[in-house]
Length: 307
Image (cartoon, rainbow, N blue to C red):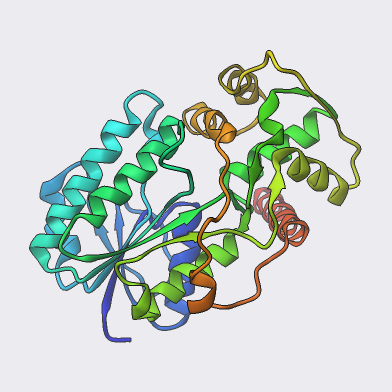
């Protein structure tokens, strides 16, 4: 592939994995970073910030297709949707000016006609901003993305580990369609190679529809733990987000918007992408085992480096 590809969010949970996957197949890859960070061998680095439009022309020069994998929740809970909007507008203007042909955006699932959380509303808004530009946008709307290093994995792992008895709000009965992170990477790479996906929006999810209670109970079973869940009607998602913030290692600015969005059902309504990019989807229990193996492998590696 001779096309130059730009990857934003290259240091994140999804971006770091996608960078490795693209480089392994010989992609000419440029990564936009706000500060110098180690990247896989072969990646070109450009220092810039989507909130600083003057830094973007150098990143966009010569780019055919760009991945948009950024969000602003890590920068603080207050005003993240304003920052996300500004970043998307700056990106769109710079990409349009540079003649970028395609953009692939990973956002979130959610029924636009329903009462969405601030996080999901923001993800849909960004898709609209990118989709209104002159370039062809592929919008992948993902359910819960599950893998080592991801917020959903960290939250569930911490809850199962520290709270064998949980008093939970009614959102534990909300349905979702969790997808393994490696399957998300397969979709992101597949969309780059398949021009039929350009200019289209697709729902992506795993092979099973589960409730959050199912996810926690099955996670506990994989680890050989016993878990008792007691739903109560008086505990709202907003209230539960506060105590979850104390239990899990995920930053409150990220954990709280995610928890508040758990009352929104996130399942695929459109499965067209399965016809364009058919591959075996990872069942949830298998995704849990893979994530745990990576997590414990990373912990072991960290222990060895400190000795």
